[in-house]
Length: 492
Image (tube, rainbow, N blue to C red):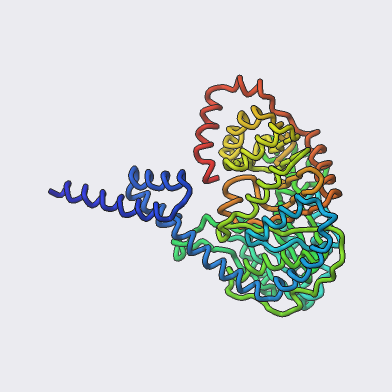
């Protein structure tokens, strides 16, 4: 009798939850995976669904949308529309593909293109940190900083010193860090920031009391905005993965570093923007700040009036679980499908979804020079194995794949022909396109596209090309490992 009651209860439980999941209208693979998990592991599956399921996504999405609405009341949207009229008047001389991509992003809810007087691509951490510190030192009104990783090592201490100095000088400084990514930030550093007057907050903090929160939604953005006119974004975090030791120290510790498996300083790319387009980085920061603190400043000084100066068209495109249309993914997909001559992808984590994979392989089959650069070994063995599981498909279509040898390459860039240059925080994987909060700066300009392409070719000089025939002789154990990692790819 008891067994019958338990059996009926389990059947009702599965039917009710399965119906609930079906009504969510998620992708078929995701829907089937949730239902199978609930059937195979009824209790564990329910706990996972309760913590990570679609309803949590909906609640987080609604909360962040409210934050976006509050931030947009600042007047930046109105100013942007006025500036867009000026750009529209210049459209006759612009590549039609640029106009299509701009329309796509705005239709997905992202801001329009804007002008920049200066776009400086930074190809290493040393120049990036120097440029950020110089901009911070020159700030007169405010400095806004958001990072996924902000550690208390040498790089973090150096930036903290610069921020504390500005705060003590009367400049408003806000620092937002992801609670998981910046777990290496010491309490002493936080205390020092707050004591100097810096307004400090953590994004989506993970605590036992808030365990029902979607702790897997992380803010992967890297943003610095100074006085609303100078902005930075890209792949470079504030941590010692990028800090080169003195040459003598490197020589002395070379063997010990090799034994411990510690890589040389990472190779990464960042971008510095000066001009009207920075307002959209500012807006993205304020969305996240309001989400974390419930407050957003509305003073006009945070959004200086547009100057209309500059020759570079820049579009700031953000994505995250609050955006149903996945703007960065759609923008990248469309840009690749519009390619006529070249597509150069640099990403530390290459775990593409079906649409991106189709765009890359189709472009190669059309005769486009499609090349992908990934690290020989990323900081995650599972991700490395999952990425390699896609090699056979792309190589078979004519895509050329390279593994960067010296160290971890962490840059997230995309070059399409000579009109599209993207530098941002998003990897080419499911997590970046759908789960993390990300931001990308797209420069619609030949000069920047050529510069990124030149750096790409420079990186290839230190990379090994993966040949199709070599993959044919891959040991069975490695094929099995890759196949197993690929099953987890939607979660990576």
